[in-house]
Amino acid sequence: SQQGEEDPQALSIQEGENATMNCSYKTSINNLQWYRQNSGRGLVHLILIRSNEREKHSGRLRVTLDTSKKSSSLLITASRAADTASYFCATAGANSKLTFGKGITLSVRP
Amino acid sequence: SAVISQKPSRDICQRGTSLTIQCQVDSQVTMMFWYRQQPGQSLTLIATANQGSEATYESGFVIDKFPISRPNLTFSTLTVSNMSPEDSSIYLCSVGQGTGELFFGEGSRLTVL
Image (cartoon, rainbow over the protein chains, first blue to last red):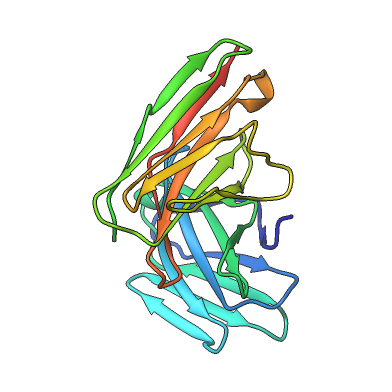
């Protein structure tokens, strides 16, 4: 069964704008991760945040985690056309297996 | 990170046939997984490929339909047996090094006619 549920399902923004994507989950987790997938290709790991962390940064990416609300957000600042892709959140439980959400399709217009 | 090569990258197959997908990693890895991504959908874990022993399958997936081999720490195969159009998907090999994140191959896009 799927754990993470992202919203919105699709997002279209102008280049230079910020993109915010949200993920909610149902059970306790060890960590939450975000991945990017370009045009049905393999997934690329973006960032991992552990259950005892609240915020993490990596370049133009900022991830927050609120375990009390069982939710996470991914912020991409100053978006570029190359950021156009599908973004997935994935949660890892005690067994370390990853469960992926349905994904968000981000379109960045030049 | 690990570099993962999957073959074939895509194939078109006839109903009732079987196809074996190969996954080669450029370094020894502790964990290897096989995922399926049906058109427009998210990823679903098929099984964990265990080196030297039988794979561990997730609910809804069975060894007869998806036999998996993992003869060493750098290589695994997934066979999709007796295919039907419902098996048309992208099949993805992924590996983990125990740090939590997974690295993925480019996927094998399978179309069953």
